Length: 275
Image 1 (cartoon, rainbow, N blue to C red):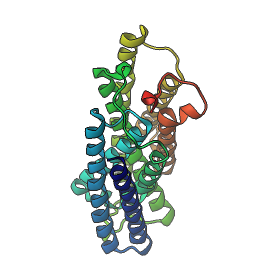
Image 2 (cartoon, rainbow, N blue to C red):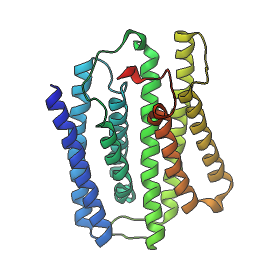
Image 3 (cartoon, rainbow, N blue to C red):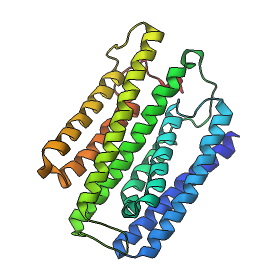
Image 4 (cartoon, rainbow, N blue to C red):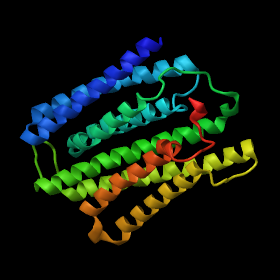
């Protein structure tokens, strides 16, 4: 089972990388055909990824976002789900795959550096609040990653002076700014629910709502980063565009550090089950 799961996971990562290549060709040569192929390819990768997620769930008996591998893989899956659904609804998002896919491929590669083998959920983590807390963390990170992909597309559009391109579905930059704001707002709400549910769970498990653990602290810092973003977007309209696009990408890096990078610098009680 482990061998099959590993093969499927890395095959998924390769298919996503191929999709990124096709997106790049589409934008470099301004051709719609490679874009259509790219979307078909990443659909195939997403279906493979769904099989990996389902197999992992069946293998461990718990939703697959507890270990580092699971959390990263599930975040990439949610980011892809958001993109594939929304690009069907909003065609101007189709070309944003070129911005999203590097984040997806890097996250899959990072996930693959952690043990892929699944384990049963430790007794200490067998709580309803785990699934609320970790589920909303995963959803929020997926939103922020998709937002960073949209922002990357916005930067490409500005740098190449591509105001519109009907063949690729590219529309004026303010459409991307607005959609990026909506993704960031949704992720901000999900991240807030993650923090609150984590506090409730911590009180039940450890007898305190807040303990200034590094992940708790950096999760709050990340949340405040997005408070600032929402304020800037709403009040300082002149900063929309390039500045807020870069801000979105930096914000996604804060989230990645808060979720998965902390352990390289600090000791933390948040160990993802030690897996």
